[in-house]
Image 1 (tube, rainbow, N blue to C red):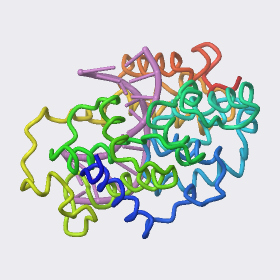
Image 2: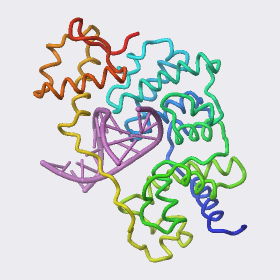
Image 3: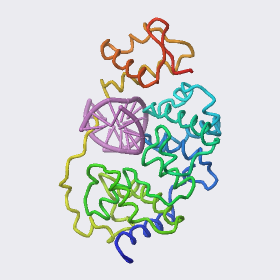
Length: 296
DNA sequence: ATCCCGGTCC
DNA sequence: GGACCTGGAT
Protein backbone atom coordinates (compact mmCIF):
# COMPACT_ATOMS: atom_id res chain seq x y z
CA UNK A 1 0.00 0.00 0.00
CA UNK A 2 1.08 3.58 -0.56
CA UNK A 3 2.74 5.13 2.43
CA UNK A 4 3.92 1.85 3.91
CA UNK A 5 7.05 1.68 6.02
CA UNK A 6 8.69 -0.29 3.19
CA UNK A 7 8.13 2.44 0.63
CA UNK A 8 9.29 5.21 2.95
CA UNK A 9 12.43 3.31 3.99
CA UNK A 10 13.43 2.63 0.36
CA UNK A 11 12.90 6.24 -0.72
CA UNK A 12 14.67 7.66 2.32
CA UNK A 13 17.72 5.47 1.73
CA UNK A 14 17.84 6.52 -1.94
CA UNK A 15 17.76 10.20 -0.96
CA UNK A 16 20.39 9.73 1.72
CA UNK A 17 22.74 7.95 -0.69
CA UNK A 18 22.18 10.47 -3.47
CA UNK A 19 22.96 13.33 -1.09
CA UNK A 20 26.49 12.05 -0.48
CA UNK A 21 28.47 8.82 -0.37
CA UNK A 22 32.01 7.53 -0.55
CA UNK A 23 33.68 7.97 -3.93
CA UNK A 24 34.78 4.51 -4.99
CA UNK A 25 36.35 3.74 -8.38
CA UNK A 26 33.62 1.30 -9.46
CA UNK A 27 30.95 3.90 -8.73
CA UNK A 28 32.13 6.24 -11.48
CA UNK A 29 29.57 6.53 -14.29
CA UNK A 30 31.91 5.33 -17.05
CA UNK A 31 33.44 2.43 -15.12
CA UNK A 32 33.21 -0.65 -17.40
CA UNK A 33 30.93 -3.60 -16.61
CA UNK A 34 33.98 -5.86 -16.66
CA UNK A 35 35.59 -3.71 -13.96
CA UNK A 36 32.43 -3.85 -11.89
CA UNK A 37 32.33 -7.65 -12.18
CA UNK A 38 35.96 -7.87 -11.05
CA UNK A 39 35.29 -5.45 -8.19
CA UNK A 40 32.37 -7.56 -6.95
CA UNK A 41 34.49 -10.73 -6.97
CA UNK A 42 37.18 -8.98 -4.95
CA UNK A 43 34.70 -7.33 -2.58
CA UNK A 44 33.00 -10.66 -1.81
CA UNK A 45 35.40 -11.25 1.06
CA UNK A 46 37.87 -8.38 1.11
CA UNK A 47 37.60 -4.84 2.55
CA UNK A 48 37.37 -1.89 0.15
CA UNK A 49 40.75 -0.43 1.10
CA UNK A 50 42.63 -3.55 0.01
CA UNK A 51 40.57 -4.03 -3.16
CA UNK A 52 41.15 -0.58 -4.67
CA UNK A 53 44.85 -0.85 -5.63
CA UNK A 54 44.60 -4.49 -6.71
CA UNK A 55 41.56 -3.83 -8.89
CA UNK A 56 43.35 -0.95 -10.64
CA UNK A 57 46.23 -3.30 -11.49
CA UNK A 58 43.91 -5.97 -12.83
CA UNK A 59 41.91 -3.59 -14.98
CA UNK A 60 45.07 -2.14 -16.50
CA UNK A 61 46.57 -5.56 -17.14
CA UNK A 62 43.34 -7.25 -18.29
CA UNK A 63 41.05 -4.53 -19.70
CA UNK A 64 38.49 -7.07 -20.93
CA UNK A 65 37.40 -10.59 -20.04
CA UNK A 66 39.16 -11.99 -23.11
CA UNK A 67 42.47 -10.53 -21.91
CA UNK A 68 42.22 -12.42 -18.62
CA UNK A 69 40.92 -15.53 -20.37
CA UNK A 70 44.03 -15.54 -22.57
CA UNK A 71 46.43 -16.15 -19.66
CA UNK A 72 46.70 -19.34 -17.58
CA UNK A 73 44.53 -19.45 -14.44
CA UNK A 74 47.68 -19.54 -12.35
CA UNK A 75 48.48 -15.99 -13.45
CA UNK A 76 45.19 -14.88 -11.90
CA UNK A 77 46.01 -16.76 -8.69
CA UNK A 78 49.45 -15.11 -8.60
CA UNK A 79 48.12 -11.62 -9.29
CA UNK A 80 45.39 -12.14 -6.66
CA UNK A 81 48.26 -11.80 -4.20
CA UNK A 82 46.99 -11.53 -0.60
CA UNK A 83 43.33 -10.69 -1.16
CA UNK A 84 42.41 -13.97 0.54
CA UNK A 85 40.24 -16.90 -0.53
CA UNK A 86 42.16 -17.45 -3.79
CA UNK A 87 39.48 -19.79 -5.15
CA UNK A 88 37.83 -16.53 -6.13
CA UNK A 89 40.76 -15.80 -8.49
CA UNK A 90 40.26 -19.16 -10.16
CA UNK A 91 36.52 -18.59 -10.43
CA UNK A 92 37.01 -15.08 -11.86
CA UNK A 93 39.35 -16.50 -14.48
CA UNK A 94 36.72 -19.14 -15.28
CA UNK A 95 34.08 -16.43 -15.56
CA UNK A 96 36.36 -14.52 -17.96
CA UNK A 97 36.72 -17.62 -20.15
CA UNK A 98 32.94 -18.09 -20.21
CA UNK A 99 32.33 -14.42 -21.05
CA UNK A 100 34.93 -14.47 -23.82
CA UNK A 101 33.72 -17.74 -25.33
CA UNK A 102 29.96 -17.63 -24.81
CA UNK A 103 29.05 -13.96 -24.50
CA UNK A 104 31.16 -12.26 -27.16
CA UNK A 105 33.46 -10.73 -24.52
CA UNK A 106 30.58 -8.73 -23.04
CA UNK A 107 29.61 -9.16 -19.38
CA UNK A 108 26.00 -10.45 -19.40
CA UNK A 109 23.31 -8.15 -18.07
CA UNK A 110 20.68 -10.75 -17.16
CA UNK A 111 20.69 -12.17 -13.63
CA UNK A 112 20.08 -15.72 -14.92
CA UNK A 113 23.05 -15.50 -17.30
CA UNK A 114 25.29 -14.08 -14.59
CA UNK A 115 24.32 -16.88 -12.20
CA UNK A 116 25.72 -19.39 -14.70
CA UNK A 117 29.21 -17.94 -14.29
CA UNK A 118 31.57 -19.66 -11.83
CA UNK A 119 31.88 -17.85 -8.51
CA UNK A 120 28.77 -15.77 -9.16
CA UNK A 121 26.00 -16.34 -6.62
CA UNK A 122 22.78 -14.52 -5.69
CA UNK A 123 24.56 -11.41 -4.44
CA UNK A 124 27.13 -10.91 -7.22
CA UNK A 125 24.71 -11.66 -10.06
CA UNK A 126 22.28 -8.98 -8.89
CA UNK A 127 25.01 -6.50 -7.95
CA UNK A 128 26.45 -6.65 -11.47
CA UNK A 129 23.03 -6.42 -13.13
CA UNK A 130 22.08 -3.47 -10.92
CA UNK A 131 25.31 -1.48 -10.84
CA UNK A 132 26.75 -2.21 -14.30
CA UNK A 133 23.47 -2.14 -16.22
CA UNK A 134 20.89 -0.37 -14.07
CA UNK A 135 18.62 -3.41 -13.84
CA UNK A 136 15.95 -3.08 -11.13
CA UNK A 137 16.66 -6.15 -8.99
CA UNK A 138 17.15 -6.63 -5.24
CA UNK A 139 20.82 -6.66 -4.17
CA UNK A 140 21.29 -8.09 -0.69
CA UNK A 141 24.63 -8.44 1.07
CA UNK A 142 25.17 -8.95 4.79
CA UNK A 143 24.93 -5.21 5.48
CA UNK A 144 21.63 -4.91 3.66
CA UNK A 145 20.30 -7.94 5.57
CA UNK A 146 21.07 -6.26 8.88
CA UNK A 147 19.42 -2.95 7.88
CA UNK A 148 16.32 -4.81 6.68
CA UNK A 149 16.17 -6.87 9.87
CA UNK A 150 16.25 -3.73 11.98
CA UNK A 151 14.30 -1.15 9.98
CA UNK A 152 11.60 -3.48 8.66
CA UNK A 153 11.73 -6.53 10.92
CA UNK A 154 12.32 -4.72 14.21
CA UNK A 155 15.05 -7.23 15.11
CA UNK A 156 18.52 -6.39 16.39
CA UNK A 157 20.19 -8.98 14.14
CA UNK A 158 19.38 -10.60 10.82
CA UNK A 159 19.38 -14.21 12.00
CA UNK A 160 20.03 -17.20 9.75
CA UNK A 161 20.29 -16.27 6.07
CA UNK A 162 17.52 -17.13 3.65
CA UNK A 163 18.14 -15.88 0.12
CA UNK A 164 14.46 -16.14 -0.78
CA UNK A 165 13.34 -14.09 2.22
CA UNK A 166 16.15 -11.58 1.80
CA UNK A 167 15.25 -10.95 -1.84
CA UNK A 168 11.57 -10.52 -1.00
CA UNK A 169 12.35 -8.09 1.83
CA UNK A 170 14.63 -6.01 -0.39
CA UNK A 171 12.16 -6.12 -3.28
CA UNK A 172 9.52 -4.67 -0.95
CA UNK A 173 11.52 -1.49 -0.31
CA UNK A 174 12.80 -0.96 -3.88
CA UNK A 175 11.40 2.14 -5.57
CA UNK A 176 9.58 1.48 -8.84
CA UNK A 177 11.87 3.59 -11.03
CA UNK A 178 15.07 1.69 -11.90
CA UNK A 179 17.30 4.74 -11.33
CA UNK A 180 15.84 5.13 -7.84
CA UNK A 181 16.04 1.41 -7.12
CA UNK A 182 19.74 1.50 -7.95
CA UNK A 183 20.28 4.27 -5.38
CA UNK A 184 18.42 2.23 -2.76
CA UNK A 185 20.46 -0.90 -3.53
CA UNK A 186 23.76 0.95 -3.21
CA UNK A 187 22.54 3.05 -0.31
CA UNK A 188 21.36 0.23 1.95
CA UNK A 189 24.78 -1.43 1.78
CA UNK A 190 26.53 1.89 2.44
CA UNK A 191 24.17 2.56 5.34
CA UNK A 192 24.92 -0.85 6.83
CA UNK A 193 28.66 -0.36 6.43
CA UNK A 194 28.90 3.16 7.82
CA UNK A 195 25.90 3.81 10.12
CA UNK A 196 23.80 0.74 10.86
CA UNK A 197 26.84 -1.31 11.85
CA UNK A 198 26.66 -4.65 13.62
CA UNK A 199 28.07 -3.72 17.00
CA UNK A 200 27.84 0.05 17.40
CA UNK A 201 25.02 1.45 15.24
CA UNK A 202 25.07 5.25 15.04
CA UNK A 203 21.33 5.77 15.26
CA UNK A 204 21.85 9.45 16.06
CA UNK A 205 22.91 10.10 12.46
CA UNK A 206 20.69 7.52 10.75
CA UNK A 207 18.43 8.96 8.04
CA UNK A 208 15.72 6.41 8.85
CA UNK A 209 15.24 7.77 12.36
CA UNK A 210 11.70 6.88 13.48
CA UNK A 211 11.08 4.91 10.29
CA UNK A 212 13.18 2.17 11.90
CA UNK A 213 11.00 -0.53 13.48
CA UNK A 214 13.81 -1.59 15.81
CA UNK A 215 14.28 1.96 17.09
CA UNK A 216 10.62 2.80 17.64
CA UNK A 217 10.09 -0.39 19.66
CA UNK A 218 12.91 0.53 22.03
CA UNK A 219 15.79 -1.56 20.62
CA UNK A 220 14.64 -4.99 21.82
CA UNK A 221 17.48 -7.46 22.36
CA UNK A 222 18.02 -10.18 19.81
CA UNK A 223 16.50 -13.47 20.93
CA UNK A 224 17.13 -15.63 17.86
CA UNK A 225 19.82 -18.25 17.21
CA UNK A 226 23.39 -17.14 17.89
CA UNK A 227 25.51 -16.27 14.89
CA UNK A 228 27.97 -18.99 13.89
CA UNK A 229 31.56 -18.20 14.74
CA UNK A 230 34.43 -18.54 12.33
CA UNK A 231 36.96 -21.11 13.47
CA UNK A 232 40.31 -19.67 14.43
CA UNK A 233 42.79 -19.08 11.60
CA UNK A 234 45.98 -19.88 13.52
CA UNK A 235 46.75 -23.54 13.05
CA UNK A 236 43.93 -24.11 10.57
CA UNK A 237 44.13 -25.82 7.19
CA UNK A 238 43.38 -22.39 5.74
CA UNK A 239 46.62 -21.10 7.17
CA UNK A 240 48.59 -24.03 5.75
CA UNK A 241 46.99 -23.60 2.33
CA UNK A 242 47.93 -19.94 2.46
CA UNK A 243 51.56 -20.77 3.25
CA UNK A 244 51.78 -23.23 0.36
CA UNK A 245 50.25 -20.83 -2.14
CA UNK A 246 52.49 -17.99 -0.97
CA UNK A 247 55.48 -20.19 -1.75
CA UNK A 248 54.18 -21.15 -5.21
CA UNK A 249 53.23 -17.55 -6.08
CA UNK A 250 56.80 -16.48 -5.36
CA UNK A 251 58.34 -19.06 -7.71
CA UNK A 252 58.43 -19.10 -11.51
CA UNK A 253 59.45 -22.75 -11.60
CA UNK A 254 58.11 -25.94 -10.04
CA UNK A 255 58.69 -26.05 -6.29
CA UNK A 256 60.11 -29.37 -5.06
CA UNK A 257 58.32 -31.20 -2.27
CA UNK A 258 61.29 -30.70 0.04
CA UNK A 259 60.89 -26.93 -0.15
CA UNK A 260 57.28 -27.27 1.01
CA UNK A 261 57.77 -29.80 3.81
CA UNK A 262 59.58 -27.16 5.85
CA UNK A 263 56.59 -24.83 5.78
CA UNK A 264 54.61 -26.66 8.46
CA UNK A 265 55.64 -29.04 11.25
CA UNK A 266 52.61 -31.34 10.98
CA UNK A 267 53.21 -33.49 7.88
CA UNK A 268 49.72 -34.98 7.97
CA UNK A 269 48.09 -31.56 7.95
CA UNK A 270 50.44 -30.33 5.22
CA UNK A 271 49.48 -33.32 3.10
CA UNK A 272 45.79 -32.66 3.71
CA UNK A 273 46.15 -29.00 2.75
CA UNK A 274 48.01 -29.91 -0.45
CA UNK A 275 45.39 -32.51 -1.38
CA UNK A 276 42.72 -29.87 -0.98
CA UNK A 277 44.61 -27.36 -3.13
CA UNK A 278 45.10 -29.97 -5.87
CA UNK A 279 41.42 -30.91 -5.74
CA UNK A 280 40.43 -27.25 -5.98
CA UNK A 281 42.69 -26.77 -9.00
CA UNK A 282 44.73 -24.10 -7.25
CA UNK A 283 47.88 -26.23 -7.52
CA UNK A 284 49.24 -28.56 -10.21
CA UNK A 285 51.98 -31.18 -9.96
CA UNK A 286 53.12 -34.09 -7.81
CA UNK A 287 55.88 -35.10 -5.41
CA UNK A 288 58.10 -36.37 -8.23
CA UNK A 289 58.10 -33.28 -10.47
CA UNK A 290 57.24 -30.57 -7.94
CA UNK A 291 54.32 -28.19 -7.64
CA UNK A 292 53.22 -25.04 -9.49
CA UNK A 293 50.28 -22.72 -9.79
CA UNK A 294 47.84 -23.95 -12.48
CA UNK A 295 49.76 -22.77 -15.54
CA UNK A 296 47.69 -24.55 -18.13
C1' DA B 1 47.00 -11.64 21.88
C1' DT B 2 42.38 -12.07 20.38
C1' DC B 3 38.45 -10.94 17.71
C1' DC B 4 36.18 -9.87 13.59
C1' DC B 5 34.71 -9.57 8.80
C1' DG B 6 32.09 -12.13 4.42
C1' DG B 7 29.70 -14.63 -0.63
C1' DT B 8 29.95 -19.07 -2.91
C1' DC B 9 30.08 -23.85 -3.19
C1' DC B 10 29.75 -28.56 -1.45
C1' DG C 1 26.13 -26.36 8.06
C1' DG C 2 30.90 -25.84 7.28
C1' DA C 3 35.10 -24.76 4.66
C1' DC C 4 37.53 -21.23 2.64
C1' DC C 5 42.28 -16.45 3.64
C1' DT C 6 43.99 -12.22 5.24
C1' DG C 7 44.96 -8.09 7.67
C1' DG C 8 43.05 -4.54 10.33
C1' DA C 9 40.69 -3.29 14.73
C1' DT C 10 40.50 -3.70 19.56
